[in-house]
Every structure is written in C-alpha cells, then in structure tokens.
Image (cartoon, rainbow, N blue to C red; front, top):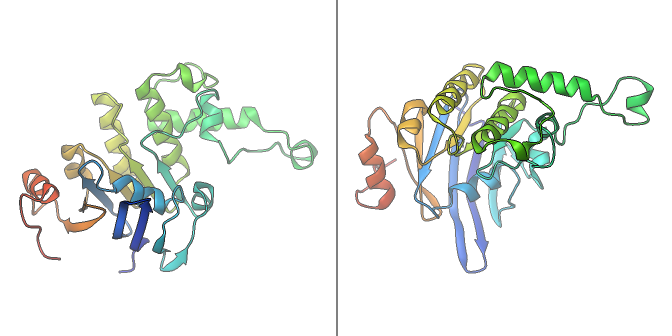
Length: 254
C-alpha cells in the first residue's frame, strides 16, 4: 500500500547540532501513527519538516507518492495537511473566530467581497461556533473573545478544533492533550477516532504513553534524530516502548 505521507532520508542541522539524521516516516490511509521519543530526539523537527514550518537540508517528502516541497505551513495547508503545534501557533490578540480562520478568511459575496475584500465576519463566527460545538472541546460563551483571555486548556481546544475542522488529507498533532484536563483529553482522543473514521490519517506525537497506546495503530519510535523502529502496540507493552526509546533494550528488527 502506498503511504499517504512519507518522509525519506530527511536531514536537518542547526550548526553542529544534528536534529534529523536520515529520518524516515510512513503514514498510511485510515491509521493513527503514534510518534514517541525522548526529549531532543527530533520528533518536533521531523513534524515541522512535514508541514512546511522547517525546510530540511536534504531528503524527500512524498504526498500520495508525489514529491512535494513546502516553503511554509500555508503551502502544506493548501494540500490538506493541518497541524496542531506544541506551542499552539495561535495569535493571542485575535478572537477565537479569527484564529479559526487565520489565513483562510472568508470574504463577503458579491462586489463587497470580490473587489473591496470585505470579510464575512458573521459567517466565520457562525462556522467557528458550529465547529467548536460539534467537537465539544470547550464551552464558548463568546466566540469573539480574545484568545489571550482563555485558559491554556481552552487555547489547546481551539488549536485542535481548527485542525480537525479543516484537515482533509493529513492531521498532525504535536502534544494535543498537554494542557488539557481529564475530560478534555478524553474528548480529544474521541475526536482522533472520529477523524480516523472519516478516512483522514493522523500523526500523534505525545509523551503520554497510555494515550498513544490507546489510539495508535502503529507506533514510530524516534531516537537520536532518526527512526529507531516501528512497533505494533498490540504486540508490545509500554515498558517495551520505553526500553527501546532509551536504548535499554534492542529494538525489534523491521
């Protein structure tokens, strides 16, 4: 089966620091791929390379078997790749609705929108309210609230909702439950299942082993800037995964 998204021999250096060392990754249709690794293993750099936030020094990225080059996250978004970044990538001074449609604003119909470029604020607010309510990630009192007035968990909810609402090809989630409570985390895990059922594959990067093992079909273990191995969570325990990740145990042969 051809991967939906594939990274082949990706390299990235920051001066003398090697962030990625011939890193590989394959994501297939209808799957959740968990990505785990110790701090500094290069997980986030790999994800940023896949979504255009970082340009690799060498290597290839393939989407549906075709080589792609993303100069920015906006270019990746145009192909249907949505990302929830670890730092959320939200604009605190803008409203919830503005953040949901940041970079994909809807213009008014007719002359006002086509020529004067007026934004359809009410339409975007209604759509944002609908999407957030559908996902059940947070109780919205005012969709025009500035994001800087929200709690950390609520901001995380907005970022996750934005990716789930607009991702059509691939959704990448970097620590999506890091700032969430138990109830909100459970809703995100349910959301991952719902997105998968729509046929959209997901890459889930997380330090929360129970979450990764619960929702992942395969688990990619990253170590020292490259893929160490890929394991089946049904055949390996969390203790096994940690042992592979830290070098305490030899990884299974591919």
